[in-house]
Image (spheres, one colour):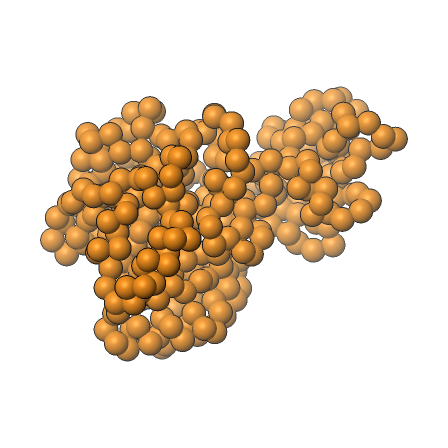
Length: 349
């Protein structure tokens, strides 16, 4: 399947640069995956589309200040590291910019401008990976998380050029498990009050965890969809969530994933035991969902609007059909919906 089949015209001004003042202030495009019917609502009307037999599956990952800006030892050249995966023993997999001159043995210093005899944090390059990836080891004195909180920045996607004044606006209100390099942005629309309202209607809310990593940032660089390889991301499904999902399925209710990361988590777990009830589990997933994939667990999806040729657009197209999704996207462009991380929402049911 050619990657160009997932291209569409997206005016740059429709890529949302800042979050709306109110989390629930977004618009909501609805798409019936059976009929292709498109509707237009406010996000606050989502509750009216849910049923007492439904379960919303949310990703409770928490974004860490994973963007570090430092200088290369010896040259003073500016270097940016994006933390992707903790490997233990102070080793991390990172995405480096620029990476070309960061060979094994190179060191990057962080916080050198803060004074003191030595910088509070240094990174030694251990190994080169493809597409700017590096394995590094941090050297520091004290507690790493406290140093990271002081020196790190929230890792906003590169197309967002506006400064984020409140870093909590890039966290969901239910964020709990630290480890992500990006927010599960479909969840940014919810407030605690709105979630309570949804629960008051009988809808269950079940958390899973998937720490968003390089898969979110890495573009599709091949011509054929099937040749793309997803980066591994860590996920967990608690026992209570598995129980709730299975109970809803037995009652004939819908399993509604809040975001592509929640959907990927459920489908990754389901792939371990096809046809069986969902089991509590944890591990790493590189599952790539694109048209032709048969969903085992997810019935409906709440998601933001994704960029052309992205793996996220391909996943959405697998659920609702490429033609229907692109038709909905063209209408979203015509109606000036806001796209991507801080953008408007879409409900595929």
